[in-house]
Image 1 (cartoon, rainbow, N blue to C red):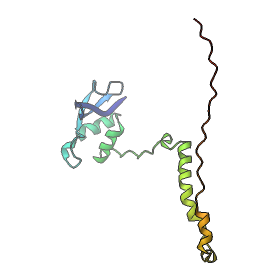
Image 2: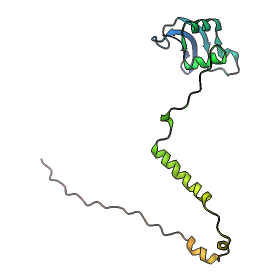
Image 3: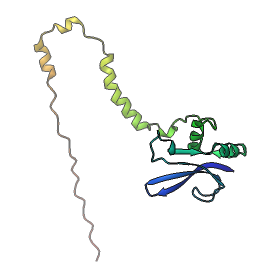
Length: 159
C-alpha cells in the first residue's frame, strides 16, 4: 500500500521532514518512491517556507490510491488538496479511573453542600451569641494510637 508520509531528516533536536510517497512496508526514513514536499517545524507558522507541497504530484498519487498519514492529511486539507480529516476524540483510556473519580466527587461534595443548604430562619439569627460560643469550640484531638509489636522469640542459630 502506498503512503504519503513524513520522512525525518535534520540533526538531533532540529527536525526537518521530507513529504514522500513510499511503500508502507518500508521504514520511516528508508526507501521512498518520490519526494513531493517538505515540512520545517522549527519555522513559525506565519512563514510560507514552513511547508512546501507539489500539488500536481500529490493529486496524481492520491488518484493512484496513496493514503496520506494523519499529519500529512492535515497539511493537504489546509492546502485544499484533500478533505480535512475529522477531529478525533480522546480515547476512553484517557478518562480518570475509579479512584480519581471518587476523589473528584468527594472534593465537589463539600462545595455543593453549603450551596444546597437552606438559608437559616430569621429567628435563629436573633439567638444570643453566648449559646453559639460553646458549640464553636473544637473537640480535643487525640494522638494516633501506635501498635506495639510483641518481641518475637528468636530461633536458635544453627552452626
